[in-house]
Picture (cartoon, rainbow, N blue to C red):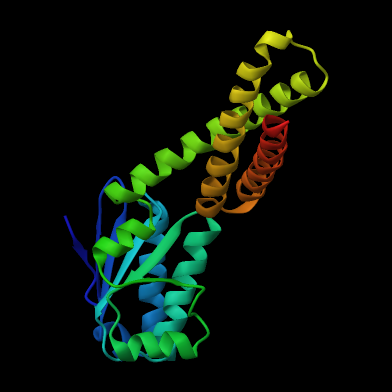
Length: 216
């Protein structure tokens, strides 16, 4: 059920919180707006989820106080590990946010569907997340298999009659490691991205080496 506080509406599900603000949010004195903002942030921090959709479709009068309120809300949510996406801003609001230096820093979506996708809550985003998690496990395993196979082949640790089989495993493992690691690196951020880049590079090097051995 939505909760109304006069200048904003607030509703939540198990997955996300939806907040909508309009021009009434921008019309009062800052002292009044600051009090309302504390009330809103308090509700957000106590909600089931810290994934927040901020609906700006009804906001046409975007002044510095509104920008300050948005930034404070965004930073408080981020401070507790949450995520905030604003969506459906008017052209004027989008321009004001850009002038405030928030373009590229604050997540902005065209509509609620796009906002849910950016939060990783859409069906497509959930599927991509599961695929990325799978790649994060498969790619390092494939890279390890490729390296072990390469070492075994170069050091002649396996019977000669099995060399072709080992070479086939090596090439397949290296291909999976290079491709899967690259895709995971594109989708991931932070330390996992760097790890995926390393896995991909390992796969590429072993693949090139394996192809060279195949031609011998």
